[in-house]
Length: 186
Image 1: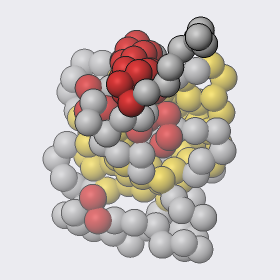
Image 2: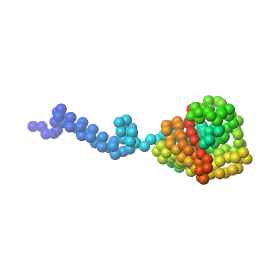
Image 3: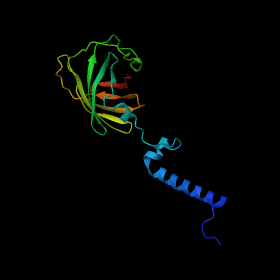
Image 4: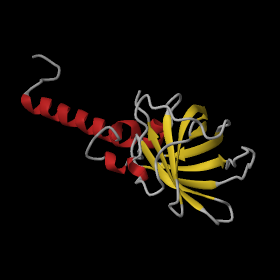
């Protein structure tokens, strides 16, 4: 008489079922695993902002004035993640041929296009983000002399890993701007 466990079809089926149940419970409890499962990942926080505002990524910055009178383009030349979820950068505002009534969502900087800088000094900003929501922690207006220093406020949403949209306003809400960030492919 032999002692031990007999691996017949019924026992193999129970072992596979038990292992599957353990894997399913672990997958539901650990977010990284859960979010990799296509059926349930719609309930997971997205990481579009993290992918868009990552270290060294060049990003085109665009805004349209609230009255639609003009469009500005800028090139983010420095992105530096000092802390997780916080990005600092510099935007050089550019002279460009686009009129104010241009659909800003279609204005792109083709690769290799060089527009002259309108102001010699960059506009500095700091953005903090969590999941797909972002907000300006610091953003300063630049006047023609480059020393205005008016702090603007705003925030928005990362709608994909390539694009973020939002609103930028003066603290007294006298003026607003639609804001777009778009990743530049190199």
